[in-house]
Amino acid sequence: MNNIVLVTGATAGIGEATALQFAAQGHDLIITGRRKERLEQLENRLREFGVAVLSLNFDVRDEQAVNQHLSQLPEAWQAIKILVNNAGLAVGRGTIDQGITDDWNRMIDTNVKGLLYVSKAIIPLLKKQQGGHIINIGSIAGKEAYLGGNVYCATKHAVDALTKAMRIDLLPHNIKVTGICPGAADTEFSLVRYKGDEAQAEKVYQGFTPLYAEDIAEVIYFAATRPVHVNLNDVIIMPTAQANTVHLHKTDA
Ligand code: NDP
Ligand code: 8X3
Image (cartoon, rainbow, N blue to C red; front, side, top):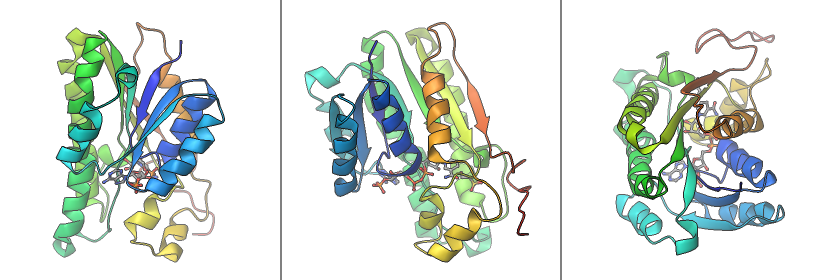
């Protein structure tokens, strides 16, 4: 059966690959992000699979905008079955004493509060259908802290806690909740973290084969397509060359 799948942060990386993965299997997509042009480009690519697409251009940090867009969904788009809470970012990698409060706010507001605003708007639609699936994109940073990761790690630990809490709260409503926690994946993540410094971003993925967005999208799709009575609670997915946030086997090191 074809479902309606909502993917936040679909203009790049894991979100974009996830939208493409679901569209390739015939599912209809609601895609969101701040970059309108990217949304339009992706919408065209998704339509090539013959699926219906709705693009919503808003910032997940803006509670009013989230509610405006998600509470006014056209009737035909309200039967969302799967929500992929993917929009997120790291900004900076300094030690806590050198922290920049604006960077902290961006991460907390996006990764934690944004995920909450979107979930709050969509859960009533899932409840109405007596079932659904929320897939939260956490991180290995939500399992361990690492040098200079401080606030980003804290936000992803919060996502981990919210995944567990949602699973408990939504149990009576037949809503599955899954946490997908990747290690190093070569997306725009590091470019954003290092504020546009391409050389520094590229260095992150040198000397080993990282995950690619498609690797994670495949796992998200697998989690979303288990039988009704099966839920994957928590998936940690790493490059083979990575053991944890600290131990990366780099051949150029
Ligand atoms: P990208 O930078 O490639 O993509 C991030 C996406 O999030 C973009 O589509 C961006 O869209 C969206 N986004 C960011 N901020 C906002 C906002 N305020 N409002 C709406 N959308 C927003 O990174 P990834 O694909 O790697 O990241 C996706 C998720 O995966 C994040 O939650 C990240 O923390 C997590 N992750 C990434 C890992 C990695 O190594 N790459 C590993 C583990 C987890 P736009 O800018 O258009 O708004
Ligand atoms: C992204 C992976 O290890 O850079 O969440 O924090 S890591």
